[in-house]
Image 1 (cartoon, rainbow, N blue to C red):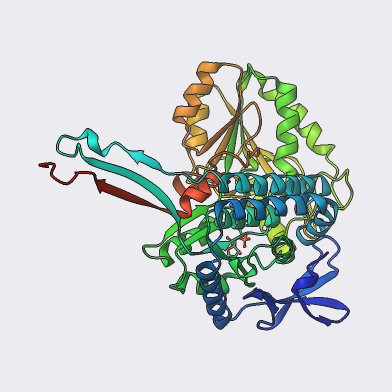
Image 2 (cartoon, rainbow, N blue to C red):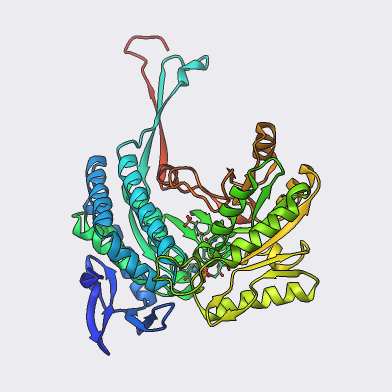
Length: 491
Ligand SMILES: NC(=O)C1=CN([C@@H]2O[C@H](COP(=O)(O)OP(=O)(O)OC[C@H]3O[C@@H](n4cnc5c(N)ncnc54)[C@H](O)[C@@H]3O)[C@@H](O)[C@H]2O)C=CC1
Ligand SMILES: O=C(O)[C@H](O)CS(=O)(=O)O
């Protein structure tokens, strides 16, 4: 199954995967070697795109969009079949992703299952793209006017995805784009390019117009060429705030959806179930080696339970199984690269040098950083105010709920926050006063429902994902007003 349609050659006993342009796997620029992120073993060669390849992909997508428009039901059938395709290949996909991303088996199973549901949600939403009747006649003088609004596809959209959940996030870009009637040019992260090729192979095998999806490969430079191409109507991006700002700056008046970084706060109040909060936060802080924009990064714990929470939490963290991501029992595997692990280790050392206290972890073996817990941190430390994107958590005590809300809001980001409490008044106050796109109550900030409008405020981005909402972003709303005055009527 592994992307055989995308294979253009063999090299050193490995497949060479091409770009997917105009319904064919084609050679691009010099292929780059993709390695298993735990063993370092070569997995495949993947061609990168030239600027001319970007242009060819956009032109092919435009031709396909114009020549093969699909009805809503055809889109529903296509995406439903693709969801079934994903479910049928669950194990193969999990094994590929564990190798390509280095994410532990237990987290990768969740990614593939979520991708199945996200694809199915997009299929269902393809049949529900409505509009609205507008009460134009409610304004005096317009009694004979009839108004309504319809949603129409944009045309060719650009999708750019990161390395951490490459399969799921490719589904969250491609599926709504197709459900909305668009065509899409997708560029995966250079660290994890294979799983998106496999996804597109699945979509092609499920019978839709192969030209509705183009896959180009490469890094920031290729991404930048996409920004500069006038043929895109819309850009949907998930990744760092730094890249997101470049995308916002580079796309002019064209619309964007940006799912960016976060430094996720999680507040644990003294009326919470402490044992449950510890279990959930210890698991969700280190899943995917903390490489999720909504990963638990800042824990704020109410003074009356602080000591008990810290003791239980550190004990739980020390019991986490660290190592081979292929082992179903492994909790924490390697980060995406040794370079990223060194960065995170450096931030931890800086924090300790500035007065933070290390309660667990802090050591590194190659790309594996031990699950790390810090306390006595200050807001200006990078492990607090920046997106650490690593298995690193800070724990800070608070005395009043006002303090907790203020510390949680003291961030340039605003994607998701977590809150553990049984008090409804406290929940509703947090819902209103926490400056985050999502509040997860009695579970950690790392929980994401693929159904809901997902996205951030402040530096965490623009727009909302979740198939229903991404489809709205990827369509234009056209208003129509008809004058119903009949012949002879004196209006
Ligand atoms: N918030 C999130 O969901 C994510 C945040 N990150 C953050 O970004 C850091 C770097 O990880 P990367 O995967 O390299 O994230 P990144 O933001 O650099 O790259 C994400 C995607 O954007 C592309 N890209 C990068 N710069 C671009 C530009 N100027 N124009 C167009 N496309 C561009 C990349 O090739 C990749 O496909 C991580 O350490 C983490 O802090 C990374 C992944 C996801
Ligand atoms: O980029 C991320 O971290 C994702 O938004 C988190 S998830 O949607 O893959 O859970």
